Length: 430
Image (tube, rainbow, N blue to C red):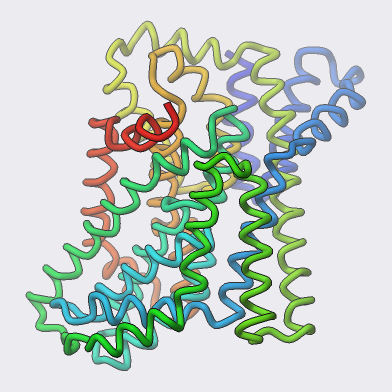
């Protein structure tokens, strides 16, 4: 029990004190080793070996590739092209650009795999267009923040790659299992946009002509092929998810430099530098989580948690509901990526004992953590949108509240009906 307190409560405490995630994981692991072996006998060589082992993975090469794709898409002006396609498709519905906002985020999700990239790049385009069309700033910001959470759900997804590597689960299956929840997520948000827009009388655009739609599609068709390259390539067996990320990256480089010619060499060097920094941060966290996971297994902490739950909860559905509530609470205080590293090694062995598929649980966990991105006090996406709009945080939170309803409704739906998640993986891969 003492080990569990040091490992979990100690880690949360260090994070709340502001210690970087990677160092908090290493520190809490070292504290356990010192507590059990004596602080004068902490195995420093073992700590170094275990942290290095954590980043020695071919699968993790997909992370810098997807990060670079997201930055390239934003810098190359792809956001405007995607937004135009969405505007010609659903701009005539009641709520106009609110629906466009959600659909554009769904389309861009298939390219960036990151909620923050969606909010920071496409989000600025969406908010400006909605404000210019007569929508209030707080509503525009709320729709943008909520729809940005679709980014890591619809594949490709950086959190899915991380979870798959940590849980030793099929990344291709997680990608496929995320498609229907992502679509339901977008439809739920669009339904809420329609309800609010009808009540408040928000503007609607005229239906796009066939010529306008064809022109928008011709401008945005090439980047729209990126997710198809990834998914079709993986499913056909031509390449692994990691290889798919590199192929997609090469495709994006050809589009950006050879066709659109919208990025200068200086801008590209800046993009590479920012991507390298983001990658280094993630790899440090991965290295720390490898040590953390090893200590959890070494002192049988996951077994203790599993035994406790098995003695108190017998129904797998009840377990998933309780774990969803727990993950939601963690997501309030810990960002999504660190939370994945914290919770995956602790919870996956538990759910496996209940006969729950790790792919289903992975999609649930990622979905839960995406809701945390628009929930204070951490709320990375919420603060990104607040920085773009300069809205008071209280106004932004109040405007975002209605959009929790469809997000939580879809979460409950995919929790109670695992077939929604597992339908495509079972159909295609098994």
